Image (cartoon, rainbow, N blue to C red; front, side, top):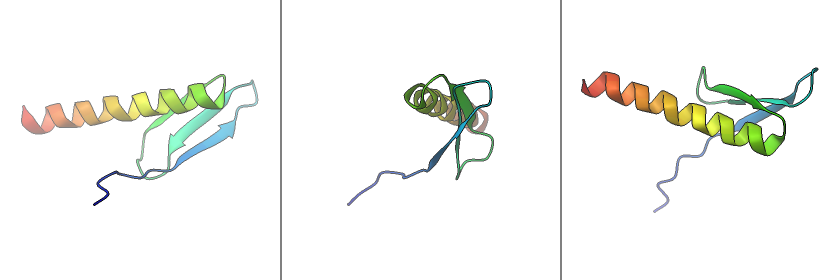
Length: 60
């Protein structure tokens, strides 16, 4: 059984250079980076931080 959550990361080139990235299914999870790979890593970090905060609020 596949228990992996599949999310869509959308990348948009920024006018000043680099990319903005957001997770389509998760409102408010957005980041940026100089390259697509950096933007991907940053938006995943943003998701992890958001989930940690949510977890703390639920269990504290």
